[in-house]
Amino acid sequence: MSSFDSYRKQSAADAKAILDNGVPTLEALASALASMPYTGPDALGAAETAFASVDVFTVDVNKPNAVVDSTYTTVRNSLASAAENIRVLERFVGLHVPQMEVSDLGLIHASTQPLVANVLDGNNFGVTVQMMFAKLLKDERDKLEKSLTDTSKYYASRADAIDKFTHLPKISTTETKSSSQSNATGGKDGDENKTSTSTATEEKIARSDHGEANLHRVKALAALDAQMYMDLVAALQSMRNGYIVILDNLEKNWTKLEEPRGKGYGGYGSGGRSMAF
Image (cartoon, rainbow, N blue to C red):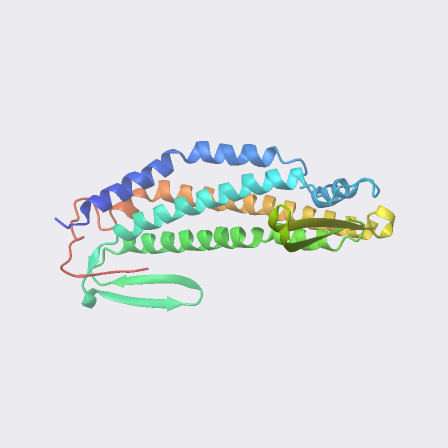
C-alpha cells in the first residue's frame, strides 16, 4: 500500500463534498446575481447615471460607493472560494493518475487539442478524461485568479481619481516649538535655573473652485465606479458558468476520474513513474 493512500482517499472525500454542495452553491450564486441593482443591456448606463447624479456643491467624493463596495465584497469572496475549491479538485485528479511505465507513455501535443496520453495498454480513456478535466480546472482557475488580481486595483484607482478633485480642502499644519533657558546666580533666593517652552500651531485651509466639485471629475469617478461594478458582475457570471461546467463534468465522469483504469486497479504505488500536469 502506498504511503499516499490516506491523502488520495481524503482528496476523493473533499471532492465529493464539493460536488454534494454544488447545487446550494449555484443557487447562492444565482441569488447574488439576481440581487444586483443594475442588470440587463442598460446596466452600465444606469449605474453610471445613478453614480453621477449628485449635487456638485455637497457631494462627498471621499465617501465610498456603497453599491460597488457591497458588490466588491460579495464577488471577490465568491471568486476566492471557487478558486480554492478548484485547487481541491486539482489535487483529487492529480492523486488519482495511475502509475505508468515510461515505455507505456507517449505524449502528443497538438495546437487544437489538449495534451493527450497515448498509452499502449489500450485502457487509457479514463486517463484522457482526467487530463481534459485537469485542463478545464486550470483554465477556470486562471480566469478566477486574474479577476481577483484585476479587481484588487479598484481602490487605488479610485484614490487617484479623488486626488484630482480640486474643490476638496487642502489642509496644512505647521507646528513651531521654542524654548528658552536662563540662569541667575547670587540672588536672594540663591542660584536659579529657569526653562520655558512654548508651542504654536498654525493650520491653513486652501480651497479652489469655490468649493464646487468639477462636473467632469464627478462623471469620471462615476464612470470608474460603474465600470468596476460591471467588471465584478461579469466576473461573477463567468465564474458561475465555469463552475456549472466543472460540477457537471465532475458528476458525469466521477468514476473515470477516481478509477481511470477501472475498479480494483491498484497501480498507485511508487514502482513506476506517474504523470504530472
